[in-house]
Length: 555
Image (cartoon, rainbow, N blue to C red; front, side, top):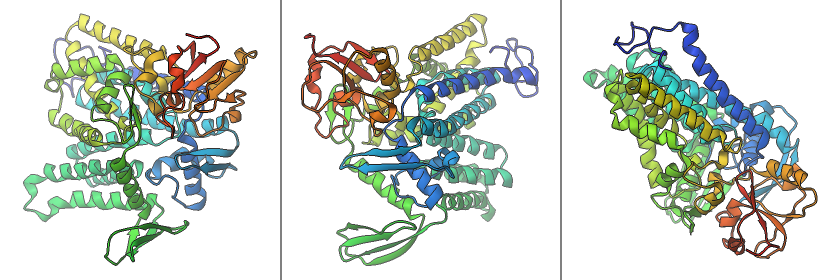
């Protein structure tokens, strides 16, 4: 990586600079690293069953493509679902589900879950590769090719990124567009042409369509556009680029909702909302005002209302051995980072900060602009009471990787330091591969796999992804009769699982397989349904997310 420095025309020369590489050799390292990321993603896809949320996103995507309807889980904008289910847009897919007071379960799925996984999940893998490419070019622009390779080497072996870009959910596309927006602002700053303004507007429109938490990020981007032109405030034209980008973003956002217009009527103690291709929705209100409005993309406003409601009431959270019924504490995400982020990434990130990597940055102001998007996201994440998984802070990863990559600027000044960094990158890859392909259940080396469930569950550990591994376990132990407690929306029998259902609060003698999220009780209406198992030591694990007990043998 030390030989991957910029040409003398773009990088100040020094005694430690290596010869300029050719264009071909400059790109072979990132190509190999992206291939490693893609290979691990495909490995995950073939070995992990559909997670709890995936059927819902597939159903919503199919409804959007085939019926122009946005109804299921409107707290997710449609861009990710459109993209993930693109291969199914005209396919003959039939999925039915039953709603429960809390959650849902699939009742019919044709074709089967593994077919659906291979026809949707790779679309998310492509988004992961796009994020890797964006990260590499951003690090090269701000630091050097060597630093870009370090950042990408960390990216290619980050388990949470591999996992969340290998499932049919929308967390990956949110992380991609937050980082894209940050980088596009810098590109516009360097070259504020009409073309770059239009590109920024499109990116901001995609940002709004990716996740609902991105509205503050879009406002920050527009603020930077105004600040960058602050010396021209006396000219009316100084505001035109930001206004143009905003108009393009809003038009793109509305197009993502197929130019839907909803009708909102408030009065007589209730709110009545009508949406295209959907039934009328009514809920009570204490407001006395009589009001009628036409709302473009009313489903987006409906989603914002749902997010605000969820954040106000919170969701049950299992955190360090305790249930928090109305959301996790403020330390939830910092602790999640310490437990779930690779140790090497954390070390290089803090070493880069302490080494003041901005001193070696080609454009410190640009680095500050980019990282401010990550900082803003972190501030809002720390205020959230919706704490059910590390995936909700996935957008922090590319910013951390960018900063960690900056360590190369210091390391390249001496050969021993370069060797140490490369060694740490190899250790990081080994750390990721030790849990492969069970990347979703990854905890760093500070946590023993058998004890991980005592710290965090839900999508941090057990999101319903273990059925393929359980099927393999059954095939390897045909003589055993298993009882199963499973957290997922796809019935185990759809994967050919033969295990009997383990009833809650009913002690059973024999071999039991219990998902970590059931064991903690975080996802159950009756939290203590399987706490009677706590007195038994597990005799094994399946997919790092499900624990095997033998209650016939007393501890």
